[in-house]
Image (cartoon, rainbow, N blue to C red; front, side, top):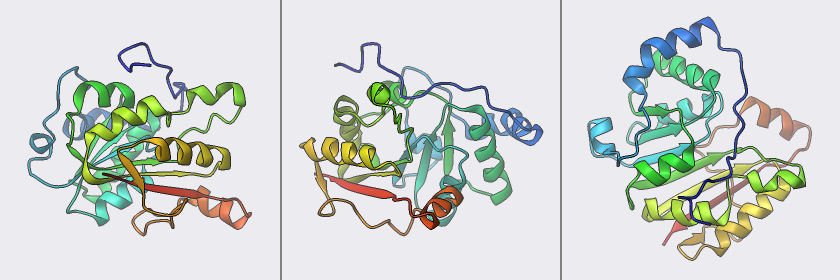
Length: 224
């Protein structure tokens, strides 16, 4: 399936509550830290005003790990994608409160951003943390990590760059392992699942799940 065709969306836009503080950040900070979607290639060095490693994050939720990673790795630039308005407002608020300068946000479908705005060989890494598992079997086709998407995504990653997926659904972890393992431009950095890299913080939900005995699977593959 070509991604130029009408693709199955991996998300459903839900009407989440936007707090007053989040709305204020959306109004005042999105013009500074947000990048509007346009069907033309994005010059990432121009966006960030420097040449530095570029990391793409797809689906950042409420943004706490995203802010943590960007704040603690000022040598990198981070382009973070999320479609849900409360999450965008939340991350903008954290950018403002924590004085983060190496993070930009796009509120748009990752498939279209990747397809239309990212040139080949521009990314040093990709983070996909806890994507929607679409756990009902009839909805599995909506999962983001599918072979056609990954085949296009790896072209955007430089040789030696990486893709890091984390999930707390075992069957999705197995699917990700199979999909990434079958992509000829990727090689696994572990025998199967990787140890959690130090840069990825534990979320409060993940911590709670681990205490209840739930599993979390990290997969880190390198672009060859």
